[in-house]
Every structure is written in C-alpha cells, then in structure tokens.
Length: 146
Length: 245
Length: 108
Image 1 (tube, each protein chain N blue to C red):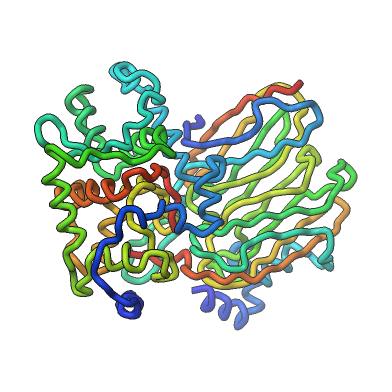
Image 2: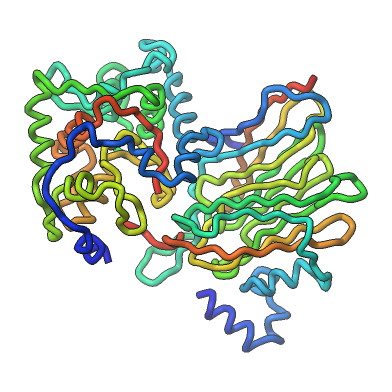
C-alpha cells in the first residue's frame, strides 16, 4: 500500500501539490521535507535510543534527548518521529514548552517491518537536530499470530 | 514455517524433574524482564489498576466481604483448586462463581476486560509468592488428567507438551525462547496480543501451534492441564501479570 | 464531557519547587488501526490521536499520535514542579470522545 501510494506521488508530482497535507506525506522523505521547510538539520546535540533488533514490532521502545537549556529564548518546541516503511510516516509529534525543563521524551511505537527511523527536533531558534537509526524487526506489527 | 522449526528441534520424549524447572522470567530477554518488573512501564498494570477499582465497586463489592485486596495475598498460589461441590476452578472460575452466587450478578464472561482485570489484581497480590496448589485428595484425579494431557502426543505435528517445554526449554522457536510452560505469569500481557490475556488463551495458541484440537476457554481439558502445570511450578514464584513477547 | 479512562500515571507524590520531574503515562486503549486489507472486515481508525497535559494554568506538553503508536500507549516526558496542584491529562479520540484524568502534585 505504501509503495503504491509512493509511486502515485512520483508519477503525479504536479497533482501531489494540490493534495491535502496528509496525502502529500505518504512517504518519510516528503514528511521530513515538510518539517525542515528548507532548513538544514544538524546531527549534533541529539541522542536517540532504540534497540537495533526488536523482538516484536507491536512495541518498540524509543527515547529521545536533546541538549537544550529549555529557556523561553532557546528551547526545543517540537520532536517528531518518522518511519520509513510504516503506512503512516509521521508516527508522533511531541510539543514541548520551556516548562518541560529538559528536552526528553520516550514512547513505544509500532513497526511494520525492518526500516529506518528518523527523529527531528525543532528549536525556538530555528535549528533542527536530526538523528536516524536502523532497526531490525523480528516479528512485524501487522501480522496476527496463532 | 512452524513445521520446519519444530522438525529442526531434536525431539525426545520425557518430562523434566521439578528441580530442573526454572521460573518463566528466566526465559525472558533482559528487556522484557525489566519491563515485567516495572509497574510504571508494564501495560499489564492497567488491568491491575482497573481490577483494584472493580474490587471496591458496587454495594456488594468484593471488598465488603473480603476486605482490602491485600487480603488476597497467597490466594493465587493455591489455584486451580477443587471446590466443595467437586468442580475444578481456576482463579477466573472462582471469581465468576463468587460473582454469580454471592454477588447475584451476571458473570463477566471469559476473556472479558473486567474478568481479566480482577484476576490480574488478585493474582498480583501473590506476586513473588511460591506456587503451592493442593495435589492430593479431590485434586489427585484432576492432576492425573492434566498429566495425561501434557504427556500425550497431539495434533498433526504429533508433539507432547514436554517435547518442547522440558526437552527443549531455553532453545528458540519462531524467534522466541521456549520456557518450561508453567503458566505462572498469567494473566499476561503479550505484545503479540496487544492486550492482557488468560492462560487458556495461550494454551489455545499452543494447541494451534501443534495443529491439535483447540479447546474452549475454561474447558475441563485446559483446567486439568492448568492444575498440572501449577503443580509442576510448586515452589516457583507467581509472576502475574507477566509480560510476554 | 470528558469520560473516565483506565490510565496509570507515575510521578513523585511531592517535589521541590524548580525540580524537573519525570512523568510516565500508560493508558488503556486498543489504538485501532484502519484495516482495509483484502479478506478482512474493514475497520475505521479509532485511536487516541492527541494527549494534552495542563499544569498550573498552562499546557505544558502535547503529543499528536498516529496509529504508529502502540496499543495501550506509553508516553514519558518531563515538567518543572512550579506549584502544588493538579496535573491534568486529556486525550482526544477519533470520533470526538475525550477522556480526562488528573493527578495532584505537592510542591514544597
């Protein structure tokens, strides 16, 4: 399904621009471009933890930490987790305020299959931190076992 | 794929001696074991939380007879058990009987969230305590029934429980590690299920795995097997709510 | 009207003013993905698509969730202890239902 949608976007680049936002983000690269909005991300100041091998794609632990003073003038205000091969590329967006104290979040995500996961963190100063990890999934989230 | 994996195992009949059996948690990956031990991250505690609320709910609440749920400490170590009328009851069956006979309420129903929640909350009060089901008196014939079930080759794969859970415990099957199959972690949260589930639900998956007859939840076959498994687990800790892959 | 929901929220009972505390949230919800595969009964998506956290008159944290979040979601975040009071957790479900829980934090 993901592949078919991606192909449709590639074949119809002009039509894609007219599609609603959700449909236009049928792949990770498009979703990432939309968040970056022309900015060049940096790979520093961000820690992204995820096991390299997941026993069950129904539940994969992810944790993100960004070095930030979390002051009104300089804080992380959004952390995005993007998936390369899930049906929906934008897995989650966290919105933070200076009152978070630290730019630190954790959650559990579903993974359809082995793939790359990207984290983007936007700061109030307009900077974007980026980290990417590959994960091998032994049992995907989309199968029903016996 | 299951067939190939099972065929690849070296099969030998036999049941491990009790002294060789290890707690189910020993077979978990370090990550899942840590999760099982952490109530702030273990989703099974959502059912415990719900069960503790159910315990206090209603005019004829569980609490109005039994007191706080802490009074249930040790109860799960003694189930399944034979009731005075001769029926073999597991913890779920005991709760349903209390509900219909003492509380005059409709049964929750097998595998309902409410029954799983109460069972999890009651079993959790025995967490860490050693299993010690009665095996003599009226329980003896049920134990024998369960033992026969455990030792009989079943299904298209023609496998007895012990061929995996005794002879090949600790080895991998479908990417998971085979445990001694004690059932001490149930009801358990299985990542594969995305929810809490009963031991009988797990046993149905076992039956399907060897391509054998799947018995209904709460059936006499699985109840007798559950008692036999519990007798094998004597002295090993209750782990409910467990966390399984 | 916000409905009750089974949730397990872990945070310290009390904290010093200015201390950064970690909050762990588990909530019972199947996070039903839309199913449209051949041979399966079609199911509309029904997930908690947003969690909002309000504390001391301000939204301090928000998570916009997709069906890529696990069933019975787990979310961990931090906040600065500013005053004694309720930390309010609200969830929006597809279809318009909302759920609410609150936890009291004592700040010394």
